[in-house]
Image 1 (cartoon, rainbow, N blue to C red):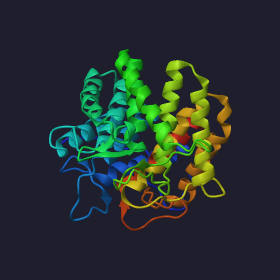
Image 2: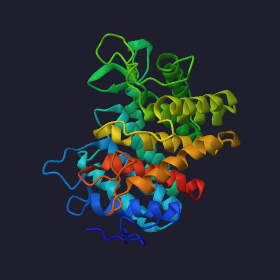
Image 3: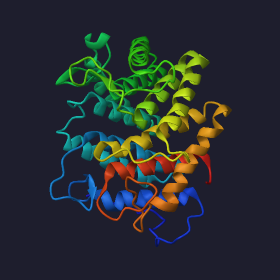
Length: 356
């Protein structure tokens, strides 16, 4: 069993004053490791307290890997990389000795985490694994709904933003690292399909999906933060490749429309629902943070990130350093890994922006 160094900052009492956002991050990362890590299975569990029956939810673990990388980037403490490797191996094992899966979008999240691991560590095995998964992901494209990437292998005619925009990000990032023209072409056609079929041309709000029920209809009522986040990411990556500011401007419009459409009047994003929905806000803030680094035009979005992080730190974090779905109040019952990860990612993005 691997032995890991504990975080330096221990969880403090509920009334403790957190002077710096970095301290709040460390407290949340401490809770992630000490409350969700299963020393016997050597992988994160889905809930704290752990439930008697825990199902395998692949894509949560991809974001757990991303969160651990966030910790390393912020602190340069190698125990974060040790934890990353343990979770990487545990996820591979729990998924049946492979990173291939029925859900294309789940594989895409893992691929993005592995590309990032390559960037941070320089270890080629991560990008080699990413390319291996990517080759399977590309089988999602088919002519149903005028093209686009399917959500999962046993429902090839359902197309949604969570399966398309992350795939475009993968394609563009692989192009920038491996310089294969085919990756750029894949990214361009996927992004075009997503924008043509699942974006409101008047407001730039991103819809979730179409043909879920086999009726060809768009799910206009499904309004989620992470759909906005991944299109921000895809448009931003394409802007980097082409130096076309129109796509950077598009990313900004999507980000700001999300605030108008989905946030409360004070700019705080409410809980979007149980299970998978718990992760959505952290994904949005990850890509909004990246957008703020591309131009000085997005000071308002920096403040939105900081404002949500402050609410987590001041209101949402309980005495154990855990954060549930509602960031405006402390959760004392069962907390999902997805919920806590969303908070960790939001806090880590705020930490990159400086003290709140």
